[in-house]
Amino acid sequence: MRRILSIESNPVNLPVMMALAALALCGCSSQKVTSEEGVSSETPGAETAPPSVVRTYDIPRFATNSPFKTEYKSPVPDKGKRLWARSCLWEKAPELTVEKWLTDKPDAEGKYLLIEFWATWCRQCRLAIPRLNELHVRFGDELAVIGISDEREEIVRRHKEPIMEFHVAIDTQGRMKEKMGVFGIPHAIIVEPGGHVVWEGFPLLKGHELTDQVVEKILAVGRNQRAALTNSP
Image 1 (cartoon, rainbow, N blue to C red):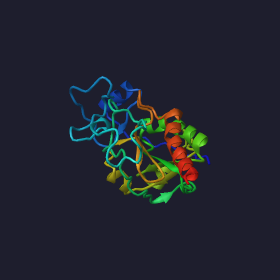
Image 2 (cartoon, rainbow, N blue to C red; image 1 turned 60 degrees about the horizontal axis):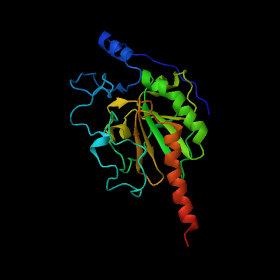
Image 3 (cartoon, one colour; image 1 turned 135 degrees about the vertical axis):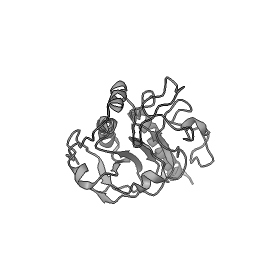
Image 4 (cartoon, rainbow, N blue to C red; image 1 turned 90 degrees about the vertical axis):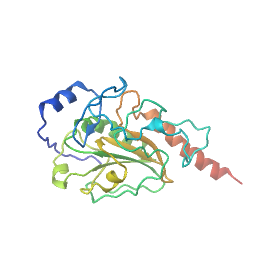
């Protein structure tokens, strides 16, 4: 289902505008933009993580909570991936909480969930919309794509371009976003049917993009698990 919503732009000071113009692909910080010395050249430099932020490569590929066997290769690289949130990889995801669906509510029974936190004012969020549309169209039978904004309903409904073809909801209290420690957007997670987070990050992060191949790999795990259960004596 295609949704037409208009973009509201907030005033941005000159330093922030320069930082955003210099970056092709980086997250939009939901807090004040700061700088950090010694940032790796692989890390987008406009929104840098405070030292306390846990990054993907700080945890084992197969944490205790991992629902997969050790021969499964993680779709999330061990090193170099920049996060704008607390890492929840392999953890049980917080309960999906929304205030109101602005589109039809997704049928999530037995499906993987791709949940992205976004806002109309965030340029990088708007750039990610076509990518999410593609995933929704190609994998909709197995993957429910959901965008959640903490903006007011009237603001989100005014968003028009790019058109959002996936499911959209608002939660002005940002409850799930807060539980996940998201401080920069867009930030997305993929949750497998058992409730574990199996992918996390910025969908367009250079070198770590959420591609069709990555999603196909994740969904194949679920298919293999279901086939094994069906064929078990």
